[in-house]
Length: 128
Image 1 (cartoon, rainbow, N blue to C red):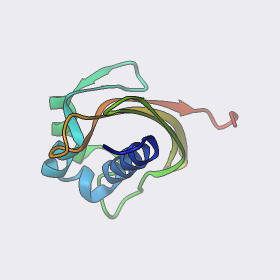
Image 2: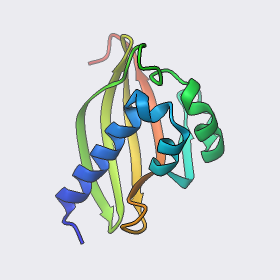
Image 3: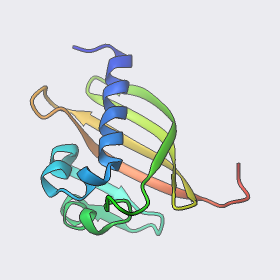
Image 4: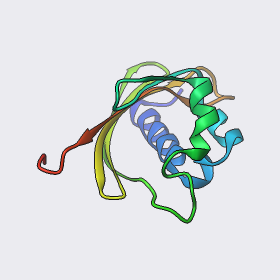
């Protein structure tokens, strides 16, 4: 069993992999990092399921190696329970900032950390 800082660091590493264009454009890689019960609430308020996310991720912004990429910063994390990490962080993508939160779940050592929930909120330019 890992200690809390190891769990948080592993979840951050998984989050960063999911922001990598090579991972975002690969269904096989995305499936490894998304929990089968994954749900995302988009900035529009729309709810996205695992199936919708896996199918659509290669076409979403940040999935092209020759296009703009997400830059993530200001990570904080807390272990809510064994095998459950809550991350908060910020991203910048093509001049647009967002505050994000993710829940990462680890059911077993074989599957590793998988994103269970994600939500991103755009930050207007006038907000620090």
